Length: 90
Image 1: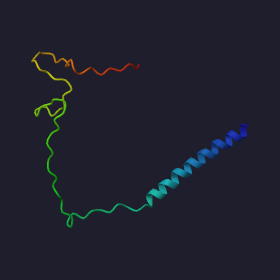
Image 2: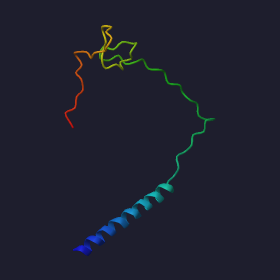
Image 3: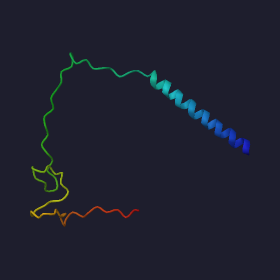
Image 4: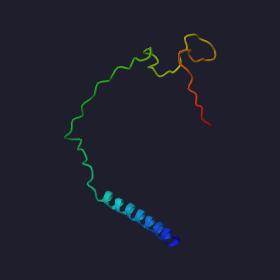
């Protein structure tokens, strides 16, 4: 049983190394992607999209603030409608 385990370990190691090298060779000999030629291709400008107005956000903050500060206190406090994210893990 001890000889079988040792042979099995060597077989797995050799098969892993050969598979890695074989994949590397296949990847190295695969067809390369076609390079675009900038002289013949015309670039099409995409229009700018308007900002997403979600969850009652206004245009000034672009919806990136998680907490809204309706009053101007010295220390920012989270809104009561948005719960704080807490984890129970260690």
